[in-house]
Image 1 (cartoon, helix red, strand yellow):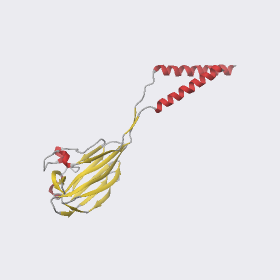
Image 2: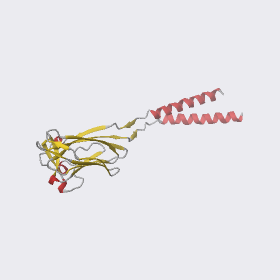
Image 3: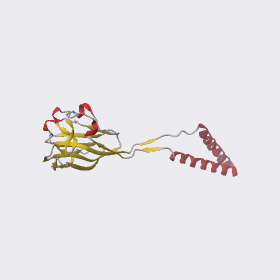
Image 4: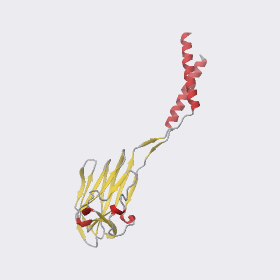
Length: 223
């Protein structure tokens, strides 16, 4: 009987240790990461087509940027390093509406579009038409026609979350209006479990304890 109690206590202690070991397995959860995409950081000369010379510039982790989502020569985004409300900017060729697309490339990832900057070229001013679409719901979540000045420009705060991505439209006066400082952040909920190998001797010990416990219970029933 004493041996049975000892065996039962030993098995119970070992089981608790194994459970504790499982909980000690490292689990990595990605933290929220913020990014601010600046045209000046591209290192491209003025009048350079961004998608041709720096495709995907500003992409980070599971977030991809497409500077020409329509693949349309009339809607290409062009680099200009100064002059848009005192900053650089990407302006739209041929004065058409331009689009910048942010896409989520991995599952279990949440993308937040925080804000972007609209600048007006020179010292003038004008009303700028813009729209932001959530690609997850295919809906226009933010739109406006604010007055943008060449002195200050304007920060557009979006603060929207999507698991698919966003499409930013701005214009239609592409020459006078430029986009810059696209701020976004993302967080991934992917859990990566790194298994911790348990030595073979431990498994043998567990098997032996289970066998002895069964044998002891069988003998106690027979007596």
